[in-house]
Image 1 (tube, helix red, strand yellow):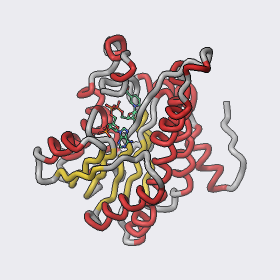
Image 2: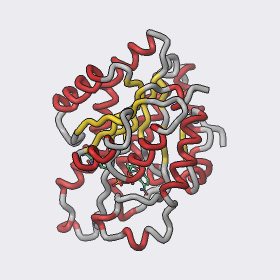
Image 3: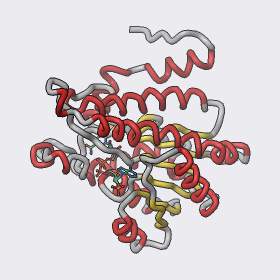
Image 4: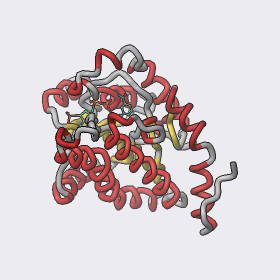
Length: 268
Ligand SMILES: NC(=O)c1ccc[n+]([C@@H]2O[C@H](COP(=O)([O-])OP(=O)(O)OC[C@H]3O[C@@H](n4cnc5c(N)ncnc54)[C@H](OP(=O)(O)O)[C@@H]3O)[C@@H](O)[C@H]2O)c1
């Protein structure tokens, strides 16, 4: 099965912390020795990664940007690294909102969260696809790897907008995979459970959540195994459980219905 071991050059957006940083380093360590391009906003963290290996390159980007700026970023990456054949979308933010106190809800944060977690990712996928379809025409595989969440399937009400952004990317990924079925462009969705990272630091909830989260090393090990196997959905721990409970057969049913041009029907 085609998996991340077949990628030559992997861009990891959101590689300056948490899951993205750990995956960037684990992908770098694969026997296939891919080049890894680490991307994010914090230059000092990109520099720290680049100092680790000649095969780790960096690209500074804020993805909460206009389509034109994202296009410039993608054009630059493809021009500098024409072998780029995989993108991991690990960038993400999360905000707590209390809609029982509407006056406390900052609408600009809702927009930022939706742009960062959904709109920018759809834009970037759209911008990378011409390059990936060109690789496909040359017989080469490529990988679009969005990171969603167990919360895409089973929402947590205090982070309601975050869950909606992840549900949007989850749905988009299922449909995109179906559209690209006849190509070598693989859509691989990573659905983490609660994992050790910096995601919750600004909310002040890290001390509580750290009692329940999966250690980053353990999570990364299982996720890399799924990526190497070529699983279409890489779910570990609680994520695997919610996927099994609420979505069993959904992806396959959507793909079959799309190929047959019939409405989706999931037998109970
Ligand atoms: N940790 C969990 O429990 C958990 C569970 C389910 C899903 N996830 C998802 O996993 C992914 C990784 O999260 P994490 O937990 O590893 O969080 P993290 O430690 O906070 O890392 C988030 C990364 O996103 C980058 N980022 C944020 N906004 C960005 C922007 N506008 N432009 C470019 N990069 C941006 C950050 O880099 P800069 O600040 O340097 O830009 C950082 O590298 C996210 O999509 C998150 O939603 C996490």
